[in-house]
Structure formats: C-alpha cells, structure tokens
Image (cartoon, rainbow, N blue to C red):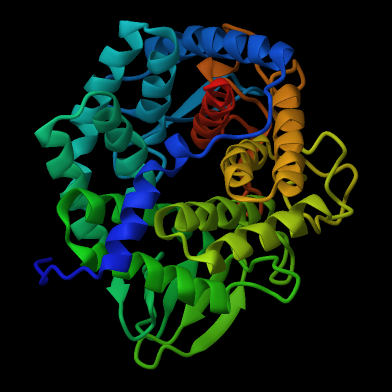
Length: 404
C-alpha cells in the first residue's frame, strides 16, 4: 500500500511519545515482594510447561488447546488466529529465563508462520504476527522481521473500508454484511508500530479511524461492548449489533470487554489522545464496578451468564485484564492507578494459584487452566488457551518491570 508520507508535527510528537511511554512513565506503585517471588516461579514453571508442550507438538503444527477430560491435545495450522501466541509466549519466557531451548523453538515456529504475512483473509494479523514477530524483533531486531511486519500491516490494511471506517473482521457469504468484532481493537498495535518503523502515516490513520468508529458504535451507555457490529459496506450504516461468543446479543461477553480495555489503552499509548484514555477508564469502570465480577477478579465467561454464581470462569479474560490494567495504571491519577494495580495484583495472585495454574507436567503443557473459548459453539470450554498463557506471562512481565 504505497501512499504519500505526510506527518504533522503533532503526529510525530504522538508517535514519539507512544514509542517510549512505557519506558518513560514511572509508576508510583511499589510492587509486592511476595508476588514478585511468585511471578519468578511462574516464569520457571512456564519454562517447564512449554518444554512439555514442545515435546508433544507435531513439527508443522501450532498448539491450540488441551482437553483434560480426554487427555488429547488440539493443534492448528499457521492460518489459525491464535498461531502467534505460542512463539510469542516462548519469547516472553526466554526473555525472563534465558533458556535458549525456548528461543530456538520460537525461531522454528516463526519459520512456519512467516507465510501469513501475505494473508489478506483475516483481521487477526496483529495477534498472529505482532505477538510473534513483534516480540522477536523487539528482542533481536532484524531486517527480515521488520519486512514481515510491514507486509503483515499491508495485508491487514486491505481489509479497511473507508466508507465504514473499520477493518473488516469476518468475511460473510452475504455481500451486504461488513462484520466488525471488538477483538479487532487488538490488531491496531501492528499498524501503529508500522507507521513508527516506516514513516508511512496511512497505517496510523487506519488504526485511529477504526478505533473512533468502534468507540462510536460498539459501546452501550454503560460502556459495555457488543461483540459484533454489522455495517452496510456501501453506506457505513449500522445494520445489526449482536454477539457470537457471548451469552446473548445484549450481554457483556467477558473477554470482549477486556479486548476493548486493552485496545483503547494501546490507542492512548500510541496517540496520547485523551478520548482513548477516557474510553479505557470507562471500560475499566464497567468491569471493576460490575456486581457480577467475583471477589477474586477472575470473571465469569459472560457478565450476564444465566447460571452465575455457578457459571464458568474465563482465566484468559482475567489475564488480558491484568495486563491492560497494569499499563493503564501508568496513565492515570494516583488513586485510579492504585485501584487498577491492586486489581491486577489480585488477578495475578489468583491465576498463580493451584486453582488456575496447572501443576508442571500436566494440562498438556499449557500454563493456565479454565479458559472459555467459544461457549455457544461448545469449543474450547473450560480448557487452556494459548492467548490465556500469552497475556498471563505478559502481565507477569509488566508487573516485574515495575521495579524499574
């Protein structure tokens, strides 16, 4: 996608601020020493688990989940939306442990994944390519990684419709459908990074346009989010608001709420636009003040599940929430930041407990138990999920870095 490069001074300033915000911002929150010790053990246990996962993985496949009832693992090809999380987690764990076995396995998986840089049939290239190649390039920058990330951003950008103002999420058999899911907020980080790396502002403009359109149409007055919005691709008008993975169209699917929380936190980091910070805080308020959020802060799979308090918990949503709240705490006033950090600590403590973290050698090699993938479809229900592990280790990493 070759477009003229044009930057205003404001945009340059925003990008420069976004690039270094995590490093420049200093949290006033002092980390819990005992939790830091627990996190170190999480890294070591994660190292052991991912060696188990590595040993059972077919050479050309990516891990997907594990069924504790049958003892069978499920894998995928590189085109599955979760394919980037396994190499991404390996790289996070390598960063914390220095175990080159994990690094070498990550590099092997990247060689299988790199062809997806040209995949224009999915909106999930942020998950697939940025969580993997983005981390690889962060740890050991290489021209080939930068080229793959650029091509991935170009492929993702082909799904943007300027009339709608969004990147298409799912393809539909109906030409009158343009389906956008809240999860798509997580793929914008790839676009922001590509503008920073190349100077091509077109990627940045697509990202903020998508974020603005989603902010306008995906959220209810209480700042809970619909899962799916169906637009008219010719006019941009909203045709339908519904769910796919939640309990009901008007319910608040837990992981969807955390995708929004994380996504708008990233948007504020990258732009310094106060609207995105306000949006992230509004979403955080909906989640944290929700009467159906359990005291251990591990959410039910849907905040409106009909069988609460017996509804299944979703450890993956908790991990995403913890990682997002740790970052968000850096951008707010001391009172709000302290509240966010306290919740993140509670989540990390509970995810690190025997209730949610698997004993080494069990769970098919995955770190966390009790994720809920797609309950209405009956898939990956009360099972480990690769993205649950990824964001758990990321949250642990972010918490550890508070010492700096």
